[in-house]
Length: 296
Image (cartoon, rainbow, N blue to C red):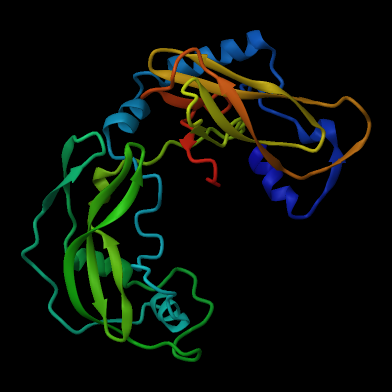
C-alpha cells in the first residue's frame, strides 16, 4: 500500500478512503491488539534463525548499490564526463595492474574480520567501461570526450551494510582531465548477499527507526499514512533477539473523498527493556527496519 500511495501522490488522484487502504491479509494495518500480536509472533518466528537472519547478522549484506555511479565525489562531475561514461567512451592509456591480491580483509564495526574475494582491475574496467543499455544522446554529437584511464590502484571506500558502515576494497582509476577518480568496489559480487525483498502485496508499516537520547526504553518510528487515517499509537512485540513494530492506523468509515497522498510522521513506542543489539522488524513486511529517520 505504501508503495502504491507514493506513486499516486504525484498526481493527486481522488479516491474514497476505503479504496486507499486495501491491504493484504498478512498485513497488520488496522489490526486489533490480538491480531497484531499473532502477526508479530509469526514474523519473529519466521525470521529468527532463517537464512536471511544469519546473513543479516553475520554475512555481507550491502544496503546500497555497490557501484551506483562509481565516481569519488569531491566536486560535481562535469556533464561531459557523465555523458561520455554513459556512452562507454573509455580508453586505456596504461597497462592495468596484474599482480593484485585475490582476497582482502574486511573489518566489521564489532571488531570481527572477514576475508572477501576480490575482482581484478581488468574485470572492474571491463564492467564499468561498457556503454549503458539505453543511450539517448549518442557521442560525440553532444560533447562527449574520450575518457583516458591513466592510473589504477587498490584503495578503500565506505559502504553501508546490515552490520554497519565498513571500509571495503575498491579500485580507484585516474582519468585524464577529471579531478575525481573513477571508483569501482573490488569485492567480488559472489561474496555479497542480496538484501531481502518484501513479498508482493505486503504492507510496510514502519519505514525507519531511531533511538531516543536519554530514554533507552523508547524508539522513534517513521511511518506513512493516508489522508483519512486516524493513528491510535505504535506497538511492539519483543523477544530476546527481535523487536517487531507497527503503527495502529484506522481508516475513517465516512463517505468523504480522500486525496491519494502519502504523508509521513514520527511516533514513539516504549519497549519493556532497552533495544540493545536486538533487530527491529516491520510487522507488515517481516523485514528489518533500518536505523535513521531520514531514510527514503
